[in-house]
Image 1 (cartoon, rainbow, N blue to C red):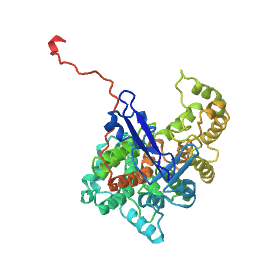
Image 2: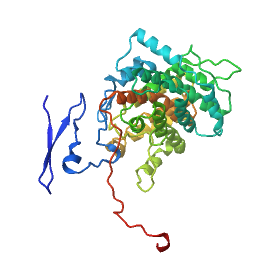
Image 3: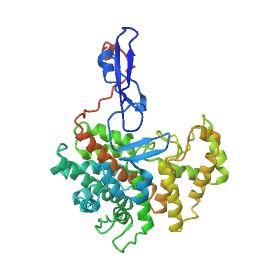
Image 4: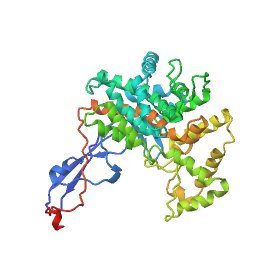
Length: 431
């Protein structure tokens, strides 16, 4: 393999440094800039970390130009078609697809950790009834460290595995409890006889007075959405989990930080914004006027669900969700959904508009996921919570990978300081 090096010369001193390019298994080389501070006394400047690799990872790979998403080398399209969320979670965390025995054991471990301490359930009563579910989930996830402190040695592989079981199992229970608290309904306990997705739907929608029949299509669609949201490389929330985890804090605190980061409308809240946009447009006749506002730089109107920070082609997840959206609406008897029909028309118009095509603004995963959530009964206030349940698999995988890495260091980004230089303090009476 050819080793690429780049030579940097300081014009003021004439001093040169050789920067080695590190080779990934796939993707662009990564330049090791560590010698710059030592040899030249300079840092690099990269707002948003758009060109900076902060870690080495073997979990997920994205080629934004080609629209490729791989989990541990497997195309997400194959996993979405053939796998289940728990199988994908196993793949992300352990690095390989499980055999039958491993999958059965894994599913049993997750299923039998779904209960949460009764005192944790009482925590929800401390929130106002209309508290945002993400505020509740973030707080309760952090509180898990106070209840399950028997396995918090982050350098013990077995403890890390137990954490993975617990957090993946309990996130749906915590999410459902937040929803029930918001409704003022009794909490519904998990059922070990149900699949991961069906159990989640049962805890959301069942009531003690009658039995709930979970529609197989609803459970299947939810499982698919969980797979597609399970990981997405070094996104904001995953990077937050890594940064918090690099301090050596307990994993539940790191996961809670990830939930908080996901809460932002530019990250996990985008699918809710898509539905709000569609309702604002109203009818297909109003699409041209709306898109004209999007093109007007003075208007600040955004085309939600189009474009992506990484993908400069079709988001591969969006293609899968679009097809699933058709199937879900048809099977559940909601094929005349006006928002879905409006979304299809908006997609058609935007993809034939040179303004959006030239800017590579294609539909992303959020464009259709909110419609599916709505079709299976998930309210908009819970959309980001559903995202958090799915992304927990990726957070756990990245946290475990980071902790097990001998090269791990506490995260400490540098800055370009543009504030005042040294000043002399003046007494308050003379200011």
